[in-house]
Length: 73
Image (cartoon, rainbow, N blue to C red; front, side, top):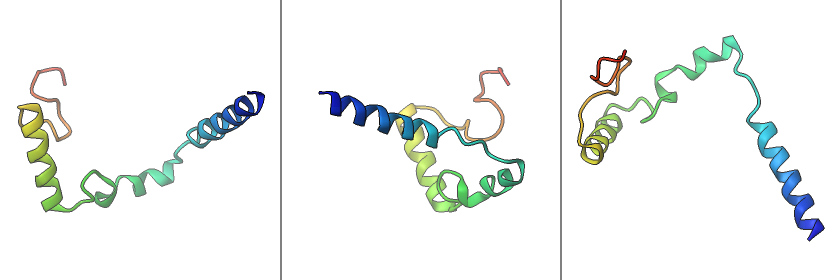
């Protein structure tokens, strides 16, 4: 039982430490590229994802920078 607890604590600490890195200002430009966004920058994949989202949510739009149409920009 103690071994399971030790393994759990070690794996949890590794998991938490992996998520604690900060994104440097010069790395943000790389992460903002089209191929790093959902759909990979592929226009056809973006259309398919938008269609699936529209079908599931029953709404259209809201994928851009502005608000979703509720007026709470």
